[in-house]
Amino acid sequence: MRKILCLLFSAVILSGCATYKFQKPDASSQGYLVYYDGTPVAEYTVGKEKSLPELSLAKERFKRRRVTVERYCKQMGQIESRLKEFFWEPPVMIAGFIGGVLRWPFIAVADYKYNHNPAYKAKVDKSEEEKEALDTARQDSIRKKLGAYITADLAKESGQEVVPQTEASFVPVAAPEAIKEVPVATPAVESVTPVAPEPAEIKPVVEEAPVVEAPVIKEVLEPPVAVITATPLKGYSPLKVNFSAAKSRSKSGKIVSYLWDFGDGDTSTKKNSENTYWSTTFGSRSFTVTLSVKDQAGSVSSITSSIEVITR
Image 1 (cartoon, one colour):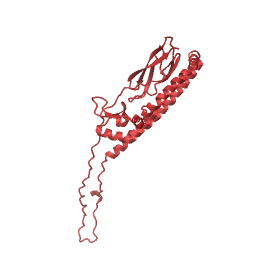
Image 2 (cartoon, helix red, strand yellow; image 1 turned 45 degrees about the vertical axis):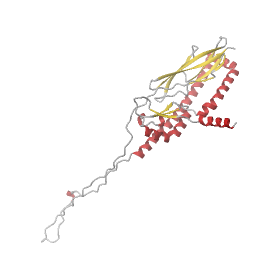
Image 3 (cartoon, one colour; image 1 turned 30 degrees about the vertical axis):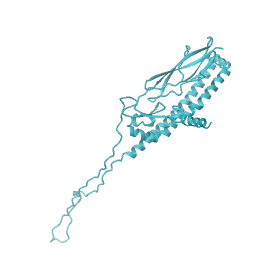
Image 4 (cartoon, helix red, strand yellow; image 1 turned 90 degrees about the vertical axis):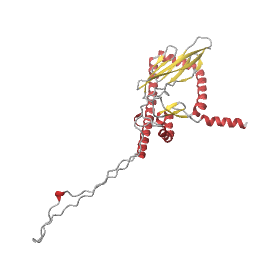
């Protein structure tokens, strides 16, 4: 019994630990990224103008930024806690599946109203657009805070490593034309013209600047990552499934378009959408859902998922 408890405790501890890997994004790159459980997170090491540093500086930045960067990334849903992934999402998925089975009559009625009542459809679409706008605003706010943190960190790093050169001190000397003859009171004595002393040679002291990080190495342009969230993944016909692409992300710019192909002939261009599946086939039938996303840089990425519909 004690061994079993120790194993369970170890599993809980290990499940909450993320794996990190320092790696070049491609063979031609000289800089390093840090991968969180296989997902590249540029903010760990990125420099000015999206440059990537050499390995030693990458490790320093990662050690300094890790906690703050992960907090912002988790708020945006770009990375998830291992504890949440293994211990929270499975029961939530099961509960959603059971709830979907119990609510299927209401789902069927709502779907009928959506497809046959224009006023109701407009109301639902407006509500979804408002939710999406709020989520987008929240994401943008968090992304700006993260960007401000990275900028401040780079400024602090530069201030610590670069010692600005100071100008040498200079003592002004009177110009020759400013010196006039001094008359002598006794006429028997010749007037004497004082001569200005020659200024001492001034040698400015210039401090040598320390070695600074190499200039921009390479701009990182990565394709977007499409992520499908579907609830439920399996249920009885008619099965209403809620789809979300909110966890999709792009390191090269904001995602600007979404395209859903639900596998039953229906499509959608919303970030968050829904679809009702009908099946008259005995047993179960599988539908393949495809999500394609496009970011500001023009890069496109796709991913598929399966929905299983069971006929009573």
